[in-house]
Length: 436
Ligand SMILES: [Zn+2]
Image 1 (cartoon, rainbow, N blue to C red):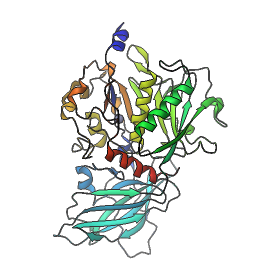
Image 2 (cartoon, helix red, strand yellow; image 1 turned 90 degrees about the vertical axis):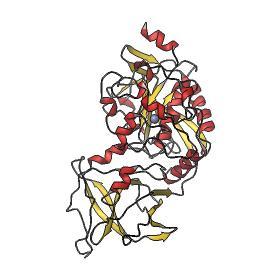
Image 3 (tube, protein in one colour; image 1 turned 60 degrees about the vertical axis):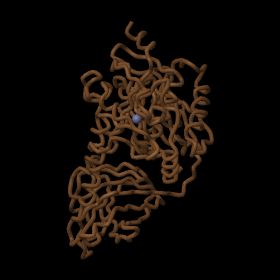
Image 4 (cartoon, rainbow, N blue to C red; image 1 turned 45 degrees about the vertical axis):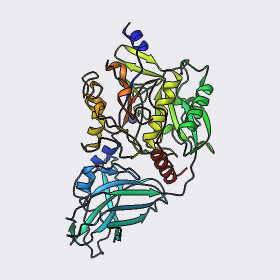
């Protein structure tokens, strides 16, 4: 019964920011990993075992990055990408050098080591130190940096940091809708092909700075090597049918043209209460393996069973999550976001042309544990979309000037219609970094 009244109420979803930013918090450094023992230069490794991450073209890096830039932050870099990191000159100190590091995974799969790459000198431009470097990796990689003066961490101020990246990959993108297991009929469309058409139309309308070439539809049971793992007669519950909630092994579908498409994986539901979909913040991987998928459910697990999503809802979740995938934060941070950033200064996304909604933080929708007393929602590494219905909070989107934007963290029939110009520009710039 409760479920029916939920269906009649305005649809509000809660989108959780990925804790992708927190994955780097678990790097363990091997201080003996330096391979340059013949180099007389002192290698100044990142100081902490847990590092904050910076994402290219993110206008809201936050206070924590400022506080930790000298002693070490990490970043995701892509092959052929050109990067600049700049901040204001502190005239009370000599110019720092930057030491760059590369992280690599150790045999046991959990711990990371690192090796030093190079030392950079800054240029000074318009009162700012500007460090420029190119990424010569073969694939997406994790790098770290420290700032150095007198063989130790730089002590000067590092204010107004900008981290910009650009690459040479095209602004064309294709989509690949992958159905997994048995898909029940979806309200609003007669079949999956129609859902795909709806999806590609909405992507073309929303992602104006991309050229969305086409959408493929593939079924996991037909995967050339993994098909037998995904029977078409069973509902797939991501997180219980498979341990990997992201179904990353289905990303980078092994077929010419399809491989580089954005893989949007449609499962029956995600086996976590009230979660509609998820993607990592700046997953930025279009060719397979880890973090190469955006997950959406045709249903959502609720405290009273499960609820079916309409085609329009599924499309909105996919667009929003894809925004995270390409590096966009929420226009207004939720409490869960602040926890995942581990930085209380990131109250909004930093774009000048996206308003934010301070009242949202005060609303009941954003109180931690309001859902079901579980703090598992805030587990690291995932950007989730939660169903509002479990919160039982009536939220008035008219109170928020950013409600019309796709990256607004709450969705209803009236919210989430477009990206801002600056968001579109960053989307395009980030797409140019990602091999596809
Ligand atoms: Zn979100």
